[in-house]
Image 1 (tube, rainbow, N blue to C red):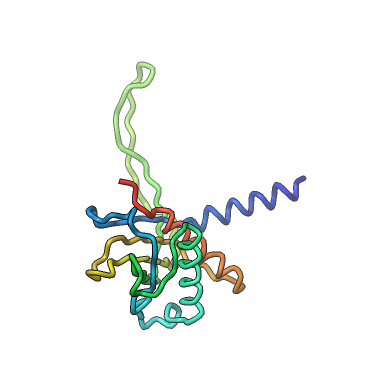
Image 2: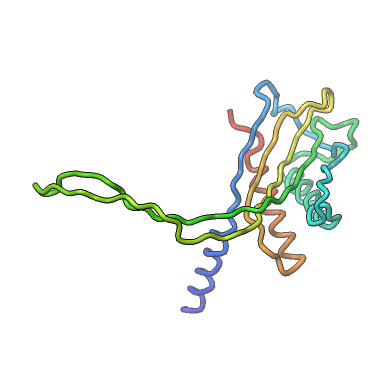
Length: 185
């Protein structure tokens, strides 16, 4: 039983450290209920010049995850001439520095009929550098080529030891981004 609790605690800790923050934006006049079929736009993704991101294996993972997620939601993958939506994505990695701070507040007040005064202090007590990855998934109108929906997922990028783990991370980010689609007005 203690081993099970340890494994569960470790899993929760890892899940908490690798959370995905998602956002979306969309064209307010788009009729999302009418979209039933999708195809890849050209280009499917935008080259970045960063070899970590312009990796054919990474692109295959992202494309496979998007196709899997959309077909599981009832959308059909069709040739571009038959599509209601064209899909494209962007990936990027940015270096970040997180600084932890501590503070004490200055103020006066009464508590149990006694006056008190506090002193303010604000000081950093540590920092860490890390990479933050973003995946933007775009849906475009085939007729106009205009963007109708964009979903974004952002999470810290850790070294993933295996191909299977990379598949899982990409699939998780794609799912969380596409969980926002269609937008609920």
